[in-house]
Image (tube, rainbow, N blue to C red; front, side, top):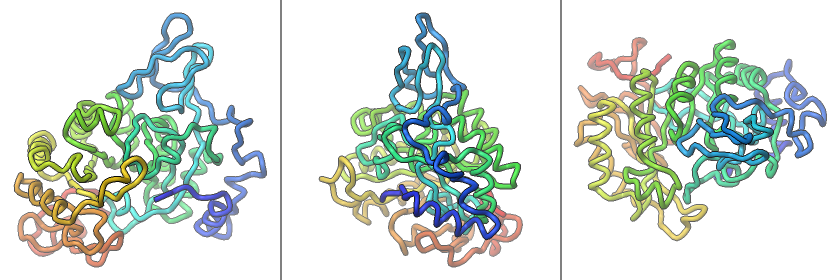
Amino acid sequence: MRNIISRREFLRASAGFSGACLGSSLIFSGELAFAGTKKDDIFRREARYYEKLPNRRIKCKLCPRECVIDDQETGYCGARENHDGKYYTLVYGRAVSANVDPIEKKPLFHFLPGTTAFSIATAGCNVLCKFCQNWEISQARPDQIRSYKLFPKDVARYAKNAGTESIAYTYNEPVIFTEYVEDCAEAGHEQGVRSVMITNGYIQAEPMRDLCRVLDAVKIDLKAFTEDFYRKIVAGKLKPVLDTLTLLKSENEWTEIVYLVIPTLNDQAADLKKMCHWIYNELGPDVPLHFSRFYPIYRLKNLPPTPLATLEKARNIALDAGLHYAYIGNVPGNEGENTYCPNCKKIIIRRIGYQILENNLDSKGRCKFCKTSIPGVWH
């Protein structure tokens, strides 16, 4: 599903959630605020993670690719550029999408359920998933797509006035706009708004640790449990993603995992068992694991949607491995959408799609039936 909104839609939405005292001019101060290709300089900021090399070359130290970039060239993500031996992000404050979403849409099921997140994206990505649902923005270069000036304090203010409890960095890959994420999150905290990152986890340790200082939750898209899948379908590697997951645990960052189950490509039971046992052993039984239904899109239109039986089998594998919170996603009304108490087995949170129908957590985040503590970030 496309998440890009037009300027008119953005303005209308902004007016709606900003209230009477805030007009759209706070974001779009006349035509100068409308980002065109001739105004790119206002979005340049020196990158925080790179190494200078001889002859004005640089090595990017943001993601595992470690692109070595000549002067006047950009890296694989297209969002960072070497200019005269100095490395710049090209998408700081350059939003291409902004929406108010239910937090369940991310999905984050153990983070402030029933709240909304002010969700933003830029152009660019550091991988190339053949099943990307937002490829129009993730595979675009910043100067190829309409964008809007939305600097961190504006993001925080709009999130606050929209009544959202968090800012979500999502749709495309937030790793490639790390500096923007860090500053938005800090500005958000000043307004009492938290931050969550929806990411592929394809990032080096230093920037991830820095992000943990300002993030309140992270959702990792674990796309498969084989290097072969990552190489052929994602144009990335599995090992760095697993390293990120263990780093998040060491940083005590609230983390949930989504696994999009794609027929014939990553739905083998043996691999799912390996993955679930790895999660149990390395991250513990309380990390929520969401098995999402695949729909044909982008470069994988030749495959069918994931059969419900496959999703239920995957969830049962996770439960049999000892994981406490295994979910089924993109199947509204399925019992796998609910949160169950691992002790008394009663429903803690009942959901249909993005809606919360019933919440049986007490004020201390415990099951109200048996008083078992349910891990997560609650109100």
